[in-house]
Image (cartoon, rainbow over all chains, first blue to last red; front, side, top):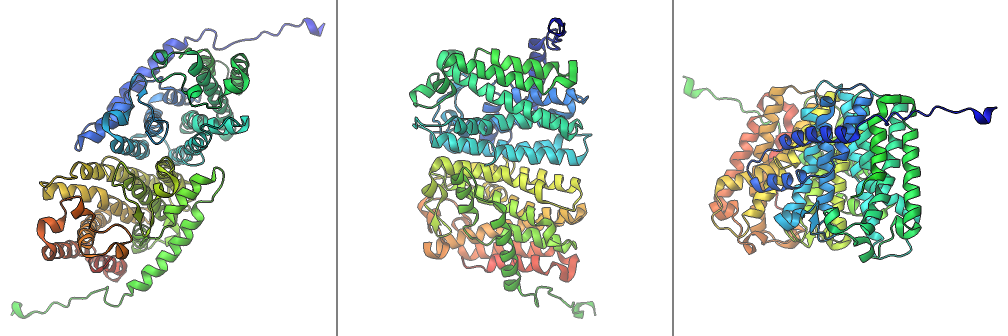
Length: 308
Length: 308
């Protein structure tokens, strides 16, 4: 009679209101980011840093950090400086990626890119300053957490940005420009470094600061790597299916640049299937935590469901 | 009879062989730097990082860090990872300063600048990677030092690079380009941020890691700020008096750019006097340490005595 046994599948995310969770967490992050940089002499550089840091966005990295901290019983105020630092680093990578010598983008999040407003020299320096300040900010503002945990987060954050992280991903991305024979392995390398590495450090830094142990941190790293790739697959799909207005940045860029993407390799329906499988795998990493993992599980689902 | 009292002035640097000290320390730093970055996939970015990191130079920042550590009884191997990180950060600032949208330099230390060899995109990313890796490197390779001291060094290093440090100095420097009315206060701001801030963190990080207390760290910070400005005055003088071959970079750039410099404000003889006064003030900070301060005192003298 085994085939008739009905497993009760509980979905901890079913009663969880993600929209409210994201809105509340985002509001807290915005307040913390706004307070993180004051404009002083020389004003132009602080204004350039703030221009891109306060330009909106989903604040996914800070929110993942807060959610991971809460999963291990930590109060989100403990990790807010690190959450802000993650957004500073992410903002740096966007400013530098948009430069004329890189992706040469004029718009980002519906606004002119940093170098279009402040000039290329200031945009490069604003990125440098945000990156360096992120590390200072974690050190100066993280309270009531053992120093060795903070050090571990700083080491992982440095690695996630450097050549073993998003810089390495961007280098391979630039090398693949205009090439039609980019392999799926290379595409995965690009995005596991360019996108997933920073999502991973966002999640694990919240966990490390809250005192999670190594097996927990490994599970969260797997979760983040999987949602990172899913996120990029969806990004590639949206580049094809959305307008520039919907995206807040130039749409159809990948096709215009004859860039190999997940949909160009697999087609759109199969890309959706792959993204869903990655998200399912990400969620499976969190099974043992029960309802406490509801926010991270809902965020994983949200990544495949988003429309822009 | 007080006016006849002869104070015995002891000069701890008199019997100190700076040339041998610098050669030995530099050789150790070169070995450590060479081991700090291995080339792996994607090779181009690691090669770009190594190209500028291994391009020579005096290695003044690492050596100051080692010397400050030894002043407080620390073994230089304890601070070598931080010494390397300081050179990575310095190298990043040189790569980005040389970019076409900044100072647009073709040569540095007698070699083509990073962007002339690897392209502007890779040069920007090599700088980003060196900056992020510097923090990772300190965390991953500093052993046998209490975490709270390492954290303090990381916080100070971040500050020295960000808008409150060398980025802020570079921004004001760029703003002053082509202006003939730059004040001495502005010139001091530029160089106390663009040059002295990183020298300061080089010296104090060695002291912090070796366990120096706050009054000691203040003295060393004063020492470094003063030698930093003296260093820049001499740099400005050498730009006027040396050939490009001697400097390993384009000479006469300041005059060509109609840039206000210390010699353009004061003339060359008075600039030499000012540099000497700053060095004397720097050395006075170290009086209480006796012979143990001989390397730092000799380095201060060396700064005004150098010919290229």
